[in-house]
Length: 121
Image (cartoon, rainbow, N blue to C red):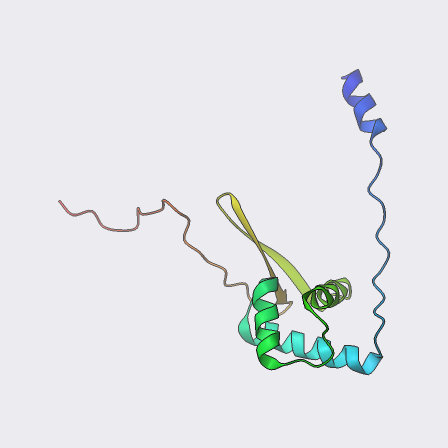
């Protein structure tokens, strides 16, 4: 027990993250965030890759790349415009971005769950 207490005290705390500051004009930030919010609202919970594909289809001006989009998504999460949900199926995790007002419909069948099928004699 004494060794456990020593190990607990010896750990350094996680450093505090400073808030993200976007280096874009506010008008451009508002345009990009509105498009991202509309895409997530319309197409439901999406992964980062799916969000990037949808935004490429829309053709958002001002986004320089996927890394820029991820920074903006994190900025929107800080301001509680979006939320991140985890879809945990078996050993795999899938993180999905969604708006606060959409119901997460991330129902996926777990592998090996075939008891719902009727057995034939």
